[in-house]
Amino acid sequence: MIIHRKDSGEAGQVHTIDNQNWVEAPAVKACFTIKHDGKNIYISYDVEEPYIRAVNTAFNSPVWEDSCVEFFFSLDGVHYYNFEINAIGTILGA
Image (cartoon, rainbow, N blue to C red; front, side, top):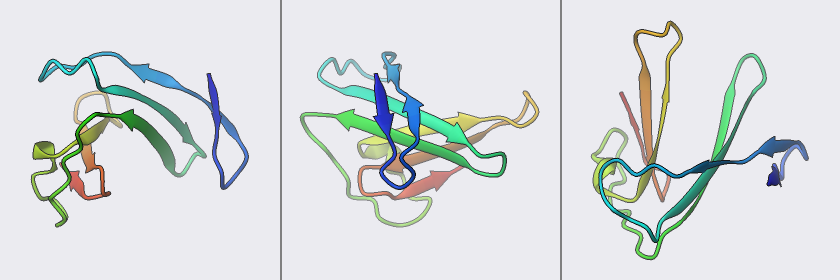
């Protein structure tokens, strides 16, 4: 499956997320695309969920209590960064 970024017209490969570590949620469907330009990382999630919770609005608030997605990355293979983003765009960065 290919999706297109509206702002650039460039296509990216869609990756399906089929692992749910914390809860059984068979009704939740999620996929993402990820790209970079050598300076920036671009990631887009597409999530379908029957019930959405999004009440945390402050930066670094407990968005894990909301419907959210996570992105982990490492620059050295040892230490990592974790970003969690809820359905209204609130970010937790760790």
